[in-house]
Amino acid sequence: MNRFWEAMRSWTLRVLICVSVSLSLLTCVDPLDLSINSSLNVLIVDCTLTDKAETQVIQLNRSQSDRLSGRFGYLPVTRANVQIVVDSSEVVTAQETTDGRYQLPADFKGQAGHVYQLRFRLSHGTQYESTPEQLQPVAPIEQVRALFNPTSLSATERLNNVYSAAHDFYVDFTDPADQANYYRWDWIDWERQEWCRSCSQGLYQIKDAQGNLIEDCVTYNFNSSFAATFDYNCRTACWEILYSHDLTVFKDQYSNGNPVKALLVGRVPLYSKEHCLVEIRQSSLTKTAYEYFNRLNEQTQTTGGVAGGQPALLIGNVYNVARINEAVVGYFTVSSVSSVRYWLTRSDATGIAPGLFVALNGHGPNDEPPSSRDRPPLAVCVASDSRTPNKPAGWQD
Image (cartoon, rainbow, N blue to C red; front, side, top):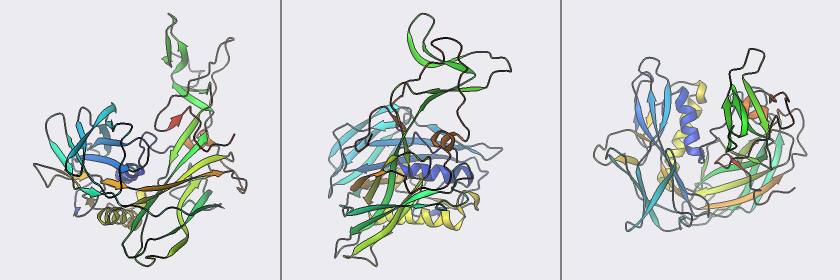
C-alpha cells in the first residue's frame, strides 16, 4: 500500500474502503449477499464521537460500482443536513467544511453515560438515522511499551510490498469488575515531513504572473526530457499524520475485573529510522458496536484480507427512515478514549527502512532542476487531516 487513506481521520472507514475496493462492501448485524459485479450504489457513513477535546467529524460518501467492470469508486455526499441528537432532546448541527466532511462545533464532545444518535437528511430529502448509542466509560491505559519487530507486517501489509518491520505496541490496564466491557484500539503517528508538494506536468508557483499569492501547481507543456512530476521541499517545519489500519477489539469475558498485561494493540510500520510521536488510543465500545467490529475483523481474516474471496455485505446501525431495508455501510460509534503519547526513538530498529517519502509514494522524490535563484521554490505545509505545520504536543526536538 503506497499511502494510507490520508483524508480519512477515522480508521473505521479506511478499513471498510480498503477491503471493499477489492472484495465488496462491509458493515454489521445481518449479512446481505450482493454480487461484486452488481451495479451497487451504497451510502457509507463514518463517525466516531469521542469524549476527547478533539475535532469531531462525520464523513458521508457513496460507493458506486461500474456496471461493466464491477470496480468501485467513491463520491463525497455533499449538502446534507447532519445532526447529533443528545439524550433525545438536544440537537447539535454539523457544518460541511469540505465535500462530504461535516464537522461538529469545536467545543462539542461526548460525555460518558449520555445517549447519542446520528441523524442526517440528504439534499434530495432522504432521511437517515442511527440507533441511539450510549457512551460507555473506558479503563485508563496504565503503561505503554514498544518493541521492534523486523517481521511484524504480513505479506499483504508490507510497505511497498517489501518492508515488514514495525514497532509492536503493548498496553497494560485494569479491567473494571462486575460489568461487561468492550474495547477498541487505534493509533496516530506524527512523522517529520520534508516534502510538502508534488506537481504533475507542472511547476510549483508561490505567486502568479501578476504577483498574486497562489501557492499551487501551474501546468506546463514539457518536452520529453522533463519528468512528469516534480517534488518540493517544505518551507517550514511540517509533520505527516498517519493512522492505524489494523482492527483491534477485545472483550473482558475472561479478564473481568483483572489486570490485563502486555496486550498487543497496534503495529507502527518502520517508515524511517527517524524519531516519531505515536498516540495509542484505548476506546470503549457498546456491546453491539463490538459485535459489529469483531464480525468485520473475523470476515476479513477468514477471507484472507483484500486478497481473499468475497464476503457478505454487513449492515450497520444506520438506516434509511423510509426504506429500512436499504443497505447502509458504516457504524455510528460513541467512545470514551484513554490515550497516551509515546516518543518513539526507533533506536532499537535494525535493517533497512524505506524513508517516509518512499513509504508513502512508492518511489523517491524528484527535484525540479535549478533554473534560477528562486527556483525551485519551497512549498507551504498545508494543514489537513494528514498534515500539520503545528508542532504536535509531546514532540521532542
